[in-house]
Amino acid sequence: MPSGERERAILVGLELRGQAGKGAVSLPKAQGGDGWFQELETLATSAGAEVVSKVQQTRESAVAATLIGAGKLQELKEEAEAFEADLILFDRNLSPTQLRNLEKSLLCKILDRTQLILDIFARRARTREGQLQVELAQLNYLLPRLTGRGVAMSRLGGGIGTRGPGETQLETDRRRIFRRIRRIEQELESVRSHRGVQRQQRRAVPLATVALVGYTNAGKSTLFNRLTGAGVLADAKMFATLDPTVRQIVLPSRRRALLSDTVGFISNLPSTLVKAFRATLEEVTEASLLLHLVDSSAVQAPEQMAQVMTVLSEIGAASTPQLLVLTKTDRLGEDSLDTGTLARRLLADAGVETESSPKAVAVSALKGEGMEALLETTDEMLAVDPVQEVELEFPHADTGQLHLVHEYGRVLESRWKEEGCRVRAEIPESIRRRLRRFETG
Image 1: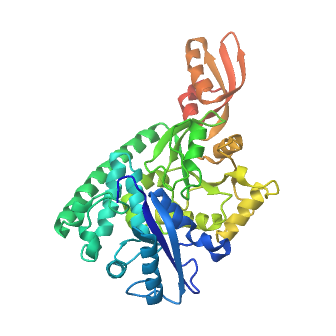
Image 2: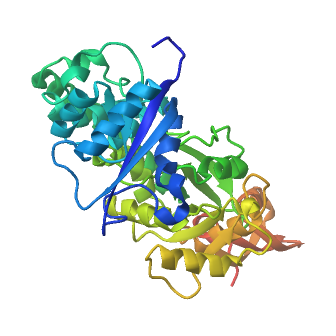
Image 3: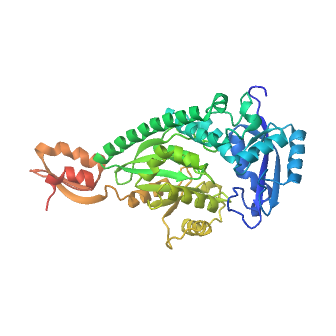
């Protein structure tokens, strides 16, 4: 295939009768014919492919040897020949045997959902840590398939599914791959230890961490840029940002907090990725508050919410306080529901039990709407370093300490007297401890 030319891809989906939503990652039929492939098509486009055809089958059970039936397999072969397809993408994970049999039958490059996501991650990783995490996930996925890839093992050239370890890794023996895996794990453990030291240093001066979580393409990076002024890539492509970014924000109470933009979640996120990105996901588990972003304009918003909740539970962050942030409200019509009603409906559809009035705010990061309400609610929900109202009296010799009150707190009243300056202010607990000797009463 000429350099720079997009690979032509055919998408394949399988629905098992009576098991909609159980293992299948395609969208419900109620969303229309193309709804079945909406997410897979977005993933394929993000990887640089051009979708030329879509093939769908509904069966009672999957075929052990080829996933889809013989008739549908023949139809798929004819489609591939007619469209001169370069690869075929399956919306389910394939076993090594299925992968080998499909390649033999279709004489075409076959990728399953996990391989496609790993390829996108390989494109997005920019830091050394991110690249190591992607390579570790790819090697763990490749290991049981060394004897099952058939023709693909010796295929040369570029294209989707060939990034990361590369073709030379596909031809190495298990021992060499095991050695490489161990080396990467050691390097990532070093990264994890370094992050631990950084967190200990942050705890020395209480500074709450707020993490943005949500389904990929929910608008996390756009909101992050709006709140912090950071230049994080905001793109409609899935996993546009992979490496985590942390910036400081100032809340209405004048408290400082760290805001972390994390990798987006997705349906059936490969377990190899969850394991490999443990160091990155620890930023989520260590956060004091999670801003759970949900694309309010997405038809599949409840399913996306449920998937994010599942991943949070898997990484041990299910009990962390959450603020539901309904994003992209500029896409909703004028007759849209109020924030509270919409939040309750989304949570109910996602199967999440909650109180009658869940904490939720609606925002449009693109237009800057709802930012004040988001910051105020975040300020109220943060338990770390709570704000307290105090009265302080600074002698003239210590009035230099006033800068702490103005910088980290909010002055409600100040009076200059012969003895010094008397101030009534709202300040964080950490600052109050430093100024304890100046308190009156």
